[in-house]
Image (cartoon, rainbow, N blue to C red; front, side, top):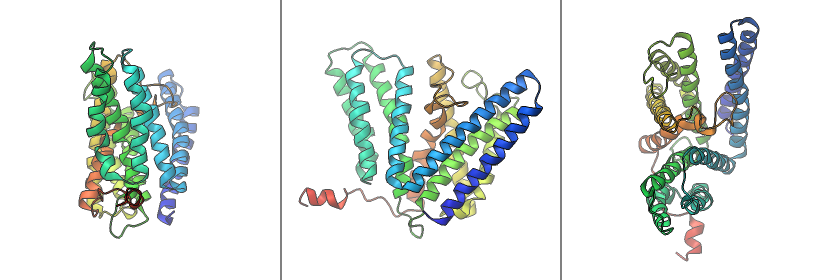
Length: 328
């Protein structure tokens, strides 16, 4: 673990300590019913952040293998929420078995052995074809397109997109060897800071709603204030990245915008399904999908921008041990 990564972990711990103190003070001072409800929700979020930050930092300390396993578990739980909220047919059960217990493990196995050439196309190409083929073999045509599309979306959003975060740990970036954990930490911290700050700014001065029928809590004031604040804070962390300050600001802005639209799209899906949250697994946040919705859109963008502009390109060939096993 690089010393600068440890410094980032200490910064997060400091932010959480300050947030916990602020939440405690507010719980003693706020008297109105609406205010107390808001503070209770805020404190529930802070407690959940302690747990999520501890788990994430612990896996980073344990190495890339543990981080890959963590995100595989997150993908599994998020996809379960996605599928549970959607109505499925009996004929979908066999397809879902393949999605959960064959495609997801194979994909993360490819990520874990760093065969990224195949990992980046396995779900959008091979699984995309396999899902409708397995569905049609059931002989049931009712809601065929809708059922197939739901499972394909679940795999793309919950598995494929999320898996780009552990893939960041293997990006070959000249002059930054052994420090990729800092890049992943920077990315996750930027997106999550943007979410938190948008929530805070929205509570403080949010007036004009952006899309009231999609996400009533998102306002122009909250969104702009949150993104600008997150970009400023992320730019101050440029020392932990391979980017110059101006590049850091540009990267932070792009991933914050992608995160915002990711959250908006996933909110539209929830509204279409008549649900407020994807689940209730995380106190104050809802379900796993509620917590990672902004990461789903921004993770692939950040991964490919880093690889294209700052990396040397991913080797599409399989690992050497597979080539030896194949006798090549």
